[in-house]
Image 1 (tube, rainbow, N blue to C red):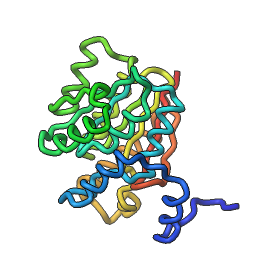
Image 2 (image 1 turned 90 degrees about the vertical axis):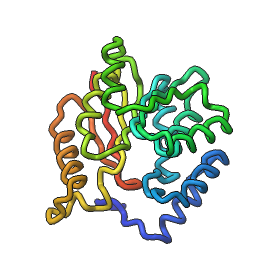
Image 3 (image 1 turned 135 degrees about the vertical axis):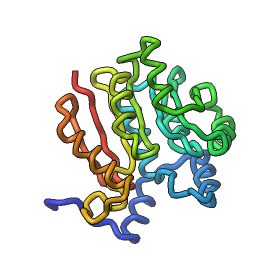
Image 4 (image 1 turned 45 degrees about the vertical axis):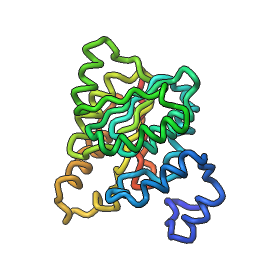
Length: 221
């Protein structure tokens, strides 16, 4: 028994992955290709991808949102977990990065589940609200530019149904959020985001120390 979260060193992390992660070949292929990308650090870890899949299945999600696609690992993980009629609204601004994603989505046979919109995510989400989609989504994953997390969160929250779930990546930011001497823009933005969620009485909240920190938010009914 322990009264605090266990420290995960390299040996324990390797064990954790070995005995718990069931990564489909399509996801491993994409992860291996992205590993040599200059911005490979933007990709989520396989254990986080698997947790997202579990959450999608637990919530019975069908309509989902992703803010920040990169090379498509999280999109692919979620798409594989969705039922046949499940859909993802995937928001990104990069044709270059998402070209990799499109190729792997097609190879995995999930292209019909993913609507990729290349535009600023805030505009895409606002457009969906204007189209009357408030309260129509079951699950969302936010992993994009940190300075806009609060804005993305508020728009996604409006689109989410009561009882729906939002997962937000990088909320521990390598531990920097706990270092008050670190006043870099992204760190400050994440610190403010975490503090705002703590005070938000519309939600149930858990910040899970997996990957780079994954915050789970359930919209109360």
